[in-house]
Amino acid sequence: MHPVIMFGAILCSPWPKMHLVSNSFMQTAASSRTSAAGLDQSQNIMSKVIVVGAGLYGLIVAKTYLQVSGAYDDEISDNPEKPCLDDLPYPFATSKDEVLEGTKTHLLIIDGACGLGGTWNHDRLYPNLLSQNSYGMYEYSDLPMTSAVGHDEDGPNGQFIAGWKINRYLHAWSEKWDLTKHMRFNWRVASISRLANKEWKLEIDIVSPSPGRRVTVLCDKLVLAAGLTPEPNMPDIAGLDWTANSTPHNVHAKDVGKYCRDHLGYHPVPDRLSEKKGEIIEVETRNKQQPLRSVAIYGANKFSFDFVHLFASLH
Image (cartoon, rainbow, N blue to C red; front, side):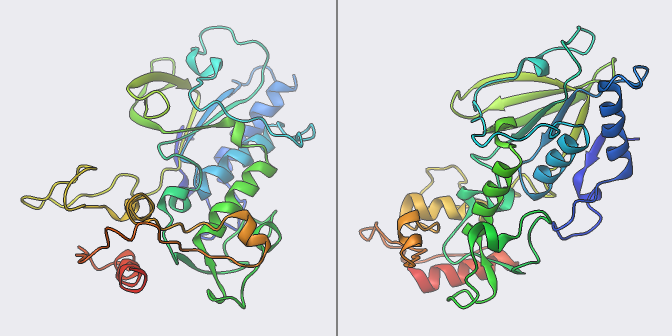
C-alpha cells in the first residue's frame, strides 16, 4: 500500500459522479475505524490525514475518508463550523511519537488558492465560462446539481453548465458534508519529505492572511489531489515580464478570471438578488476608461479559444 496517493488514480471514472475509491485507501480507513472502536488495538491508527487540493477530487476523497472512518456517525450540525484560515490544528504540529488524546481521525485539506473548487475556484472564473458537460454528468452522486443550483437548460447557455454554478455547487456540497472547517486556503506546499517514523512532513508557505509565514505540518497519510498542472508553465520569451504589475499585462490562463475582475470590471458570478429576480447577469463592465485595444494569445488549446471569444465579444 502506497502512503502517497495521486488522486487521479483513485477515481475509477473520469466523471466525478462517482464515489468509488481505491481498495487500499478504503481498507486503511476502515481499519482505522475498527481500531478506534476498540475492536483491534493492534492496528496502527491513521489519525492524521492531509489532502492537498480542494477541487473535485480532493473534496470527494476527504468526504469518503471521514465517512468510512466513522466521522459522520453523529448528525452533522446545521451550522457548520467556519475555518480559521491561519490556524494550524494542534494534532498536525505533533509527531505521532507523542501521545495524542483519544483515537479521533483528524483531517486537514489545504489549497494554495483563495477558496475551494480547483479549476472552478472563484478567482479562475471568467465571463461566459461553461463546462463542456451537461447537467447530470458533472456532479457527485449524493447531490444533484439541479437541486443545489437550479437548471437553466432553456437559458442562453443551453444545456452546458456555467462555471459559476459549478463553483456554487461545490460550496453547497462541501457544506452538506461539513468539510469547510477542515480547509485552509492560501496554503502552498513548499516541500514534502518522509521522516524516519514513516510520517510525512510538509513545509507550508501561508500566503494570506499572514504572508511570509511558514509552518511545518505532520501527517500519517498524504493524499495529493492538486491536479496534473498545479503550477503554471510560463513560456521563456525574451523581454516578457510575468510579474503581477507588468506593463503591458502578461497573464497566465489560470489568472485570466482574476485579471478580468481586477482590471476590466467583469463579474462572472451573479449576485443573489438578481438571481432571485430571474435577472441573471453574468458580466458587468465598470472600468470603461481603460479599454483593451489589443490582445495577443500564446497557445492553441481550449483555453485559447475561450479567451479569443471572451475578449472579442465582451470588450
